[in-house]
Image (cartoon, rainbow, N blue to C red; front, side):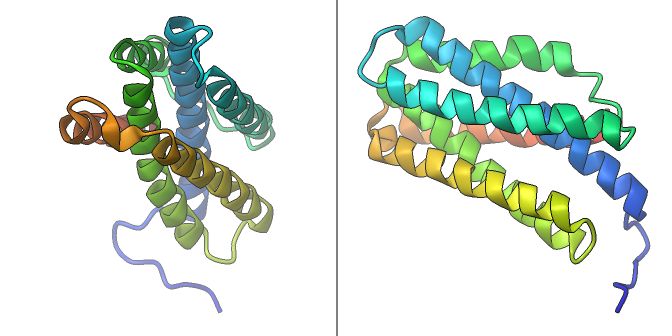
Amino acid sequence: MQKRRLAGDLDPRALLERILRVDHAGEYGAKRIYEGQLAVLKAAPSTPTIRHMLEQEKEHLGAFDRLLPQRRVRPTLLTPLWHVGGFALGAATALLGEKAAMACTEAVEEVIDAHYARQVTALGEAEPELRATIEQFRAEEIEHRDTARAGGAAEAPGYGLLSRGVKAITRGAIWLSERV
């Protein structure tokens, strides 16, 4: 049975475009965050963990790099901002130490978990392959969040403020990338 659309609901094509655009932007931003963290932390004990998460983000980004042209969806116009901003966020939190880098990861991935869950719900039974891809990536983002927690995210200096700030930045980036 077809889900009934309500006033303000996106039509299926607009929903698809929004999902692919924002997910591509998010995976690109995540890649840049980890690159910024690694540029600062270099050979710290957490670098193998961060490298592993970076490799997964690169795989996610590669999937969306393929999906955008296949589905004839343009990327966000804000990619240059996410290029600089993602790296800066990763580097800035890493400058505060490994625990702060983990707090950044935890905050970003917590927002992304909820974001991907909303997308899966919005897709419903439509786009089963895309839904499965998003569910797989969501599971890996949850793994990143849990790894960051185990890595001492909550022990970061100013954890509460840092976490709230990174979550606000992430939510803002999502909102903008869906629309621009």
